Length: 105
Image 1 (spheres, rainbow, N blue to C red):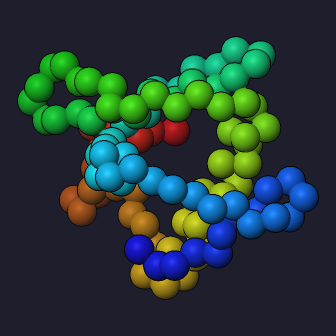
Image 2 (image 1 turned 90 degrees about the horizontal axis):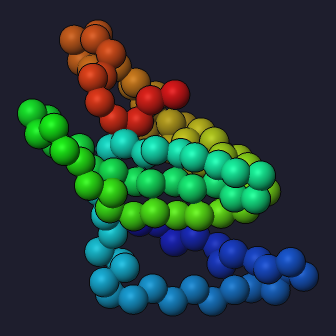
Image 3 (image 1 turned 120 degrees about the horizontal axis):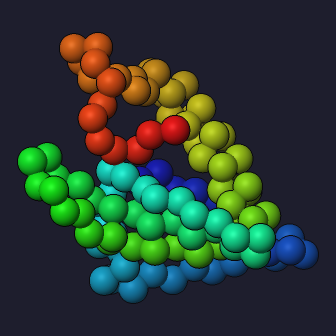
């Protein structure tokens, strides 16, 4: 992963981020279930396996609506940077069919 500038807090100060080894391993997800209330967004990241009817939530992330909107903006910016460097991300399978599972709009 490329080095990224340190995030900045509300007053512009640099934030040092520490990540535990167990968290650094991460969780693979190919589906997200999103729910919301007036106060928060809930993102349940799931790993689905073909031909298996059950899927387990790997990670649940809760955030305020303003942070959810900031996340969307950050993802859009990073997807653009990625595609500028590596080319367009295809949203269909190589044979032209839509995916049968995974992240869907």
